[in-house]
Length: 408
Image (cartoon, rainbow, N blue to C red; front, side, top):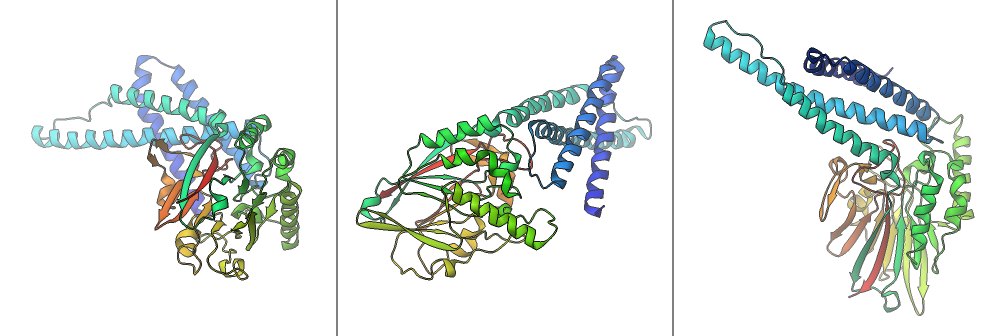
C-alpha cells in the first residue's frame, strides 16, 4: 500500500474515534443508546460504499450502477460530515484546554476540564444532518438536474451571415458512471429543444472504455443541427487511467472510441480545422487533442491545427482543458475569438447564486466555470453533462450551453 493512502486511512480512523468519543459524551448520559445503532450504521455504510467504489475503480469505472453510486455517495458524505464535526470539536477542545489553563493559574491548581457543550454538539449535528439531506438530493437527483445556460457574445470580426448563429455545447459525459438512462434521455431531449445551428462536444465521452457509450449511442446519434456536429477528445478518452494488458489494447480501445464518434454523427477533430460556411461567409472551427497542465496529457498542437489556414478568419476553438487557454491559446500567433472547454465539472460541488460562484476547484483552475474574457478573446467552460468521482452534484448542476454569436 502506498504511504499516501496509508496516511489517509490512519487519519480517517483517528477522526472516527475522535468524533465517536466527542459525540458519545453528550448523548449516552441521556440514555440514548440508539446513538450506537445510528453511528455504527454510518460506519457500515461508509465501508460498504468505499469498498464498492474501490471495486469499480479497479475495473476502470467501466460501468457503475445506481446502488454502487448511491452507497459511495453516502460514504463520501458521511466522511465529509465527520471531518466537519471533528473540526468543531477541535475548536471546542482548544477553548476547553485554554480555559483549564487559565483556571489552573487563577486557582493555583484547583480546576478541572469543563464538560463538552451539549448545545454545540447538538447544533453541529443538526447542521450536518441538513448537509446530509442536501448531498442526498445531489446524489439521487442533482446529477441529472440539467440546466440550459444561454450566453450571447458580440464580436466586431464576426461575418454578417453568422449574426445570430446558435452553438450548443456540452461536455464531459463520462458515460461509465451514468446510472439512469431515462434521465440521460431527458437531457438529450432538452438539447434538441434548443434548435441550435451547430452542436459541439468538448471531450470525455467515457471514463476509460469505448463501450461505455454503447447504451447512449442512439440518443446522441439522434441529435442534429443544420451546420453539423463536431467533437474532440478529453483526457479520459485516451484510456490512461486503466492498466491495459498492452499498449496495443489501449490503442485499439481508443480507435473504437473514435469510431463511436463517427457512428453517432460527430466529426471528431484531432488537431485540425474545418470551415463552416453559411451563405457567402465562413468561420473556422478548430479542435485540438487534450492539452492540460501536468500531470495531464499535452497532445494538443495549435501549430499543426492551423498550419493550412491564413490569418483573418473568425475562429472558434474546442480545447477540453481550460488551462490550455491561459498557457497557450491567448499567446498564440492567430487571433482565436472563442475557446470552448470543459474538464473541471465545477468540481460538482459549489455555490452559485446570481453572479456569485464558488468552488474549491478554483484553487486549481482560475477559469473553472462559465464565461471569461481577456481583451475580447473569450473562454467558456462548460460545467459538464455527467459526473465522475463523487456520484452527484450539489450547487453545480449539469450544463447544456447555448451560445449565440452577435455581430457588433
